[in-house]
Length: 207
Image (cartoon, rainbow, N blue to C red; front, side):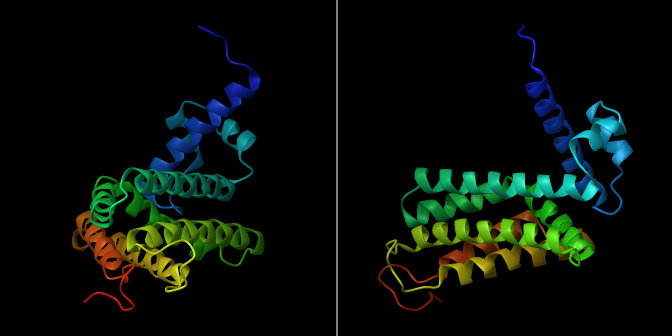
């Protein structure tokens, strides 16, 4: 087997630490997640965490950015594979139903933002990541509505902000009362939101 270079080995270590940390953050929450436990779960010492990430905050930020980038790739893949409106909406709902951890992670993101919101550098980075997410969602909404790229019929980024807020709000409620907020409910509400956007031949939301 080919021996990994130092750079490749470091990248693998980061990947393993981020995977272990993501599990810990979802399971325990941001505040309660423990760096020692994360390192141990990944098979490393605490020193390995701090040689790759400046802090627990930096580790979470990297995970958040990595997750939202992966979400963007998944959205693009769905858009390429499903060009019809109903087909795309069904695919989005099915994808969400099969990714329960996404909703749980969103709840941790809300906890993280509330704890670090006063740090200007952190706030700027989180804001940039969510701006990118809203842009991707807006593009997906535009395709699902049937409007052309040049259409000015809808403020898609406004609708995208609403959709992100829906997810963050449900995720927050789920952390308080998990039994009342299911991933099926989340997926159904997202699809309902998208279905109510005007289509290419309509100027008002469907009712």
